Amino acid sequence: MLLVTCPWCGPRDETEFHYGGQAHVPHPADPAALDDRQWAEYVFYRENPKGPFAERWMHATGCRRWFNALRDTASYRILATYRPHEPRPSPQPVETPTAPPSPGDRRAAGSSGGNR
Amino acid sequence: MTTEPLPEHPEPLWRNPEPRSSYDVVIVGGGGHGLATAYYLASVHGITNVAVLEKGWLAGGNMARNTTIIRSNYLWDESAALYEHALKLWEGLPDELDYDFLFSQRGVLNLAHTLQDVREGTRRANANRLNGVDSVWLGPDEIAEVCPILNTSPDTRYPVLGGTYQPRAGIAKHDHVAWALARRADALGVDLIQGCEVTGFLKDGNRVTGVETTRGRIHAGRVGLAAAGHSSVLAELAGFRLPVQSHPLQALVSELHEPVHPTVVMSNHVHVYVSQAHKGELVMGAGVDAYNGYGQRGAFHVIEQQMAAAVELFPVFARAHVLRTWGGIVDVTPDASPIIGATPVDGLFVNCGWGTGGFKATPAAGWTFAHTLATGVPHPLNEPFSLDRFTTGALIDEHGAAAVAH
Ligand SMILES: Cc1cc2nc3c(=O)[nH]c(=O)nc-3n(C[C@H](O)[C@H](O)[C@H](O)COP(=O)(O)OP(=O)(O)OC[C@H]3O[C@@H](n4cnc5c(N)ncnc54)[C@H](O)[C@@H]3O)c2cc1C
Ligand SMILES: [Zn+2]
Image (cartoon, rainbow over the protein chains, first blue to last red):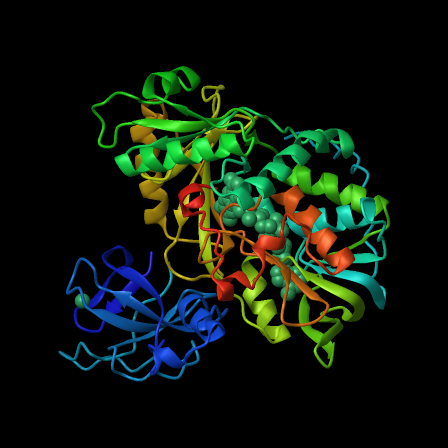
């Protein structure tokens, strides 16, 4: 089971969360201008990388807020979690430990989450 | 401790050839679908200058990890035609391949626990009958006759309200299926090349002319992708996208028991399905782990939930023990139907998106993909399953028949 760090509540078990797929998929700016192929891209096509993936999670049995995570889909290691309006962090090499959060600062993006 | 000498190693079932520099057709992925495609290319289309390139060992992916359920009771005409074609091929394959892979038509029950399930199931059984698929709707008492160890009493959390039953459905020994296909394809001249990962594509303009591999460059007239969970990774290397998401899917077996379970039982609503293998293990699975993953493993809470559901349905299993759990990587499409056909790259074709349920379709995937690779155009059976359908909107929504079920 993953340990997922909610940017508001801190580290919690995976079972408290709902998964939301790829993050940062903008709604088309001018929907009427899209052709069928572009609609297909928006509705059905999502990235599916083997490696770092920016994805949405929702803290379903906690604060019920959506947030984003950068997670390696091969190792399942969570590289970072961050609030929806924050930009996607660049993937850190897994070996480099992220700076420990300062006391009381639960917003520190570097998640302690990892795989089993 | 006695030191008995080891028995003689059995005769290998296929050669282990060095890759040649060029083939008429190169198939990427040596799972069930890649092997069936090679077999039908050689046996039906007479194309034997074929290589199957497998990055690991033959059939070590989902083919070795699935729970072997075979059935054809899908809702839509397009799917019923494809899966029923597979089932008819299964019925002849043990003889055709001269290999008894323990294909056992012991039937499949798909249980209904809610009004919505009942409506979906009766509709699907009726649609199946119109398509010549041997599906019937059974009430709880008839279900108890088919599978006496199932708890059909009304006082459970999700009582069994009925279910569909397909008597010709069943299970088979997946690894033996792969070996049977491999042996015959090899005998017909196909090169099965293991430990050979495709790392790139050679192109001349928009036409594929071969592949880069960890064992060198291999030229090809046509290339077919049959890489299941890794299809997106290969598509990206080839320069196009696929509407699939890769997820971990887990399964488990118990230790061996006397035969107690006469059929296959699946429940989309309580999220479990169970059969009993010939040796005696209870074989169980459920839905995918929610997140995208290439790790061939998932979380234990998914296992825990499916066992809770299994014990509710089958009180007799309460004291069985888990022996082993494992996972594979399944490539899931938005409409729970596969993609078999052309890609935006000329000469490059794809068979993917079978998600949690492609074992049952192994012969039909091979049959239609071989036709597509041999002729350059789809067989009528796979024409509706084109990549195009996500743009035209002609989706084939099989979530009712496929959801948790496989
Ligand atoms: C736990 C589990 C239970 C399942 N249960 C059922 C069931 O009961 N009934 C059912 O119908 N279906 C079931 N399925 C689904 C079924 O297993 C798959 O749909 C089917 O096996 C996919 O086709 P395949 O056999 O060719 O895939 P695979 O055996 O996965 O073959 C794909 C191959 O491609 C290879 N490959 C990938 N990338 C490369 C590369 N770059 N170069 C070379 N080779 C590469 C892989 O190593 C792999 O061997 C289940 C799957 C899982 C994981
Ligand atoms: Zn929270």
